[in-house]
Length: 388
Image (cartoon, rainbow, N blue to C red; front, top):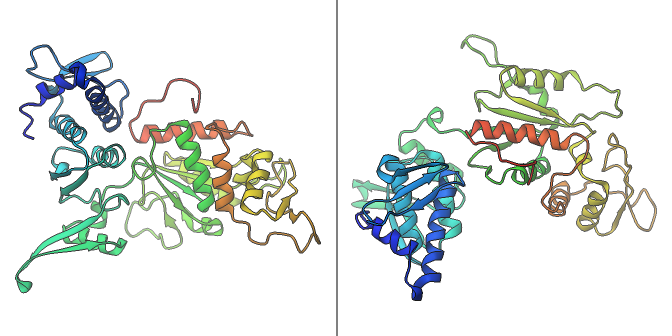
């Protein structure tokens, strides 16, 4: 556990005996993948020299001894090795944030959760895991009035917020997402997350970016401007930049034809966001659903609403939700008043076969958004065409 025997342990996994070959090679590959995931570099390889005195880490064309790469990388490798060598064990880790930055810590927890079978008990004074849904939060404190140490669960968002306050954090101290994507509603989030993950699987909502809703008509109350002086009047608008300095905003154009211009509110918000270094995306068609190929959209509607036979206009400026009618009975009586846009979006994305649809300017806009998120997270662009 101290790491003194780490080189020999890794060399045994790297070059196992014949009777343990399959099991130990699998563990060594798991540790390698662990390092690739947490360090976010597919070129990372673990190498153990013949004398087993140290561990080398290869990153691209460079090979360096582990001790030259900082305590964070050493700690990640040690945790990866211990976690991979054990199954269904309880592993206790004390204050991992001491040597790990917030992104590495979140990636570590995600990998432990997805790729190992152990249970992990971590002590921490950091707020970085308070919003992770895969983590159970326990608050431990000494209370002299009750005669000892008290342990309590933090199940709700308000309970977790109180823990952050108890640790001495202010709202302005908490680490923001590296970028934020503003969308109109929940179904937009499903499409955007699907397109982002298809284009670059490294980008994870909650770790590399967050999605926020502004809700149609509320757009008029948002601004990309920021008040530099406290006395400036900001009561009229909600400022986006203090919430996050790397904003992207997706807006339905609501255009009825190619000649229609977007309204003044949308033009203002887009201009303000772009002036401050963010990006805006106004749909080329009427709504975000117009990016979905007609056949996929019809099939998604039929799965979400089996009693309905949608009559969809091919035009990118027609509303996809205006002409839903039942396959039998009066047309007016069969219209869907409240189509379930979220389920329709989920069904449509599930039918995408892991590709970005070649519809209107979708590929171009997804590429711009993904490039923006990569830059905000200091990630290199992926080689090859979009979504490959």
